[in-house]
Image (cartoon, rainbow, N blue to C red; front, side):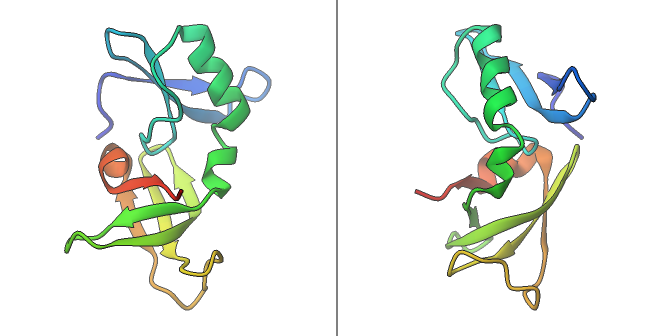
Length: 117
């Protein structure tokens, strides 16, 4: 279940879900579909602009997945839904179709996934 503090943000032209907005008191944070912050808190308009520019594009970026043992592995997003994201290990920058898909619940995304630097 998605946190009740997340407000879905959709593109006006086609109603495509681009991410979520979360008001944290010190500003509004733009979140990916799986809850990872895309920018620091700011105004709602600034957060919406970030999601318009990077919401879906962030899915094509490399991410690090923290596994149960604490080890982080580079992953690629292969599918994203309002409540979950599917990732596969991508140690060399590409998703190997032979790798096992990992399902990450959206509400766990910000804890388990972070941008690959």
